[in-house]
Length: 186
Image 1 (cartoon, rainbow, N blue to C red):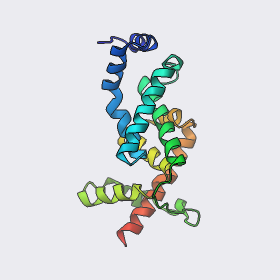
Image 2 (image 1 turned 60 degrees about the vertical axis):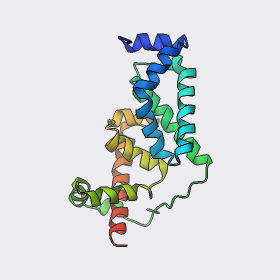
Image 3 (image 1 turned 45 degrees about the horizontal axis):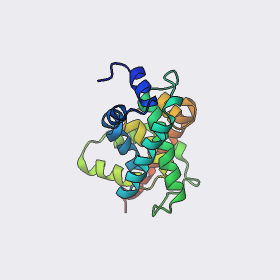
Image 4 (image 1 turned 90 degrees about the vertical axis):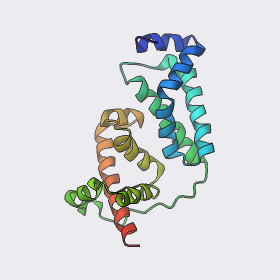
């Protein structure tokens, strides 16, 4: 339908309903998945999802293809809208305090063995362990492992630098490993 992203952007800037529907069809599922992983209540996730696209449509003229792809630019909006919602809404989440834990002592080999297991029980354990991470750390893990975003795109999405993202990702992965270990021995 739209041969180039530039053409789509032009139509979106003119607020053409057909272009807006096309954008929702092309990216709606991806954006909703990102929102729903951070905002876990279905109704709240739907509300944030709508807010994301309202913001996308209102700010499409500020999109710069030189900075990021359209999908990454929308992911950035979804990430920030989701975190803002979670921050202003009390969440029944228990966070693991990692201040007293030496995360650097965790061996990469041991972590790799756990995360490479593909059995159903381990997958469920990892998914359960994600609930113990703060929303920003969970989002980081989800973007990298579930959305297959690269470090550069995650840095753009989170208003960070690639080196900071790599460092946070490493630390969060170690933290997740510790949570998995503690859940296995409950």
